[in-house]
Image 1 (cartoon, helix red, strand yellow):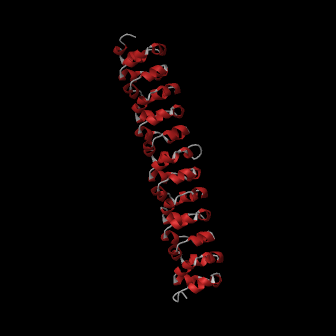
Image 2: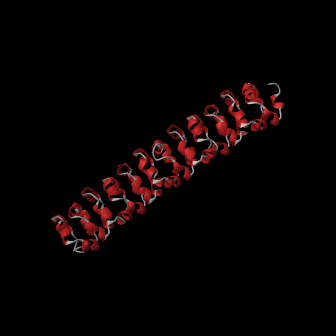
Image 3: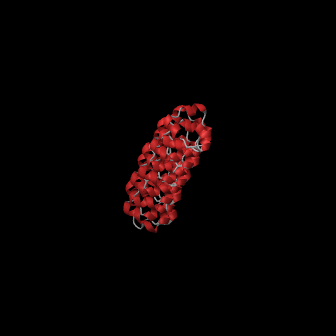
Length: 333
């Protein structure tokens, strides 16, 4: 159409959808941002995917949120990565869940962090797993805590890459709900940074499956706060390896409850360092089974404080070996 750029916005808006559909791509490109903004949603919907792909970034940015919502999924997919970058946060937030599903992984990867952060939790939950996994670590860090908490426990959370897990901020990690924690993979837990481990709430700690807990590195175990250690269930305590147990600080050992201590295997008891044994409360010492007492090394027995020795019952004393008894110092006796 000759001199289309000379038409007023009112004239542009009055054109029929048939006329709009007959415009060439060259005509579409000539439209000013004001003219693009004057197009009705019906006119927008009548544009071909070739026309959509030919739009300049300035033209795309001039579309109203209603225009964006009027785009078909085919038109959405026709947007170039430059067009995706040009979308405003309001335009991005206006995309329907069907549009979100229609977006390609390449388009998602091109989305700006501000636009990504503008997505609603409903839009986040509509993302396909392949698109979610394609987000860059920078994009992952741009997610709000509300968006992070909205990632579906079934069908999304397990598809985050280990690099994405590493990229999560402590605030994002702390925002994860227990269902998300339950559905995270062992590899994802193993990838968590020590600062993130320390940021977990006690409720989140309790939700970690025993297999996932047993897969944590000794550095991750050492990063647990005393509050987190005291929150571990007896099943979780039983799942901890001897190497992990040795990674706990004496402060961590000191906060173990009697039920947690009783959940330790004899191999775990034998693996405790003398410093860890000395950190056990008198209540914990008294709660040890005879099998656990017998599992203490002679060095551990010698390391017991007088208060701990005094807490031992006669039955527990009887379970000590003759070598252990002989090694007791005069101060202990």
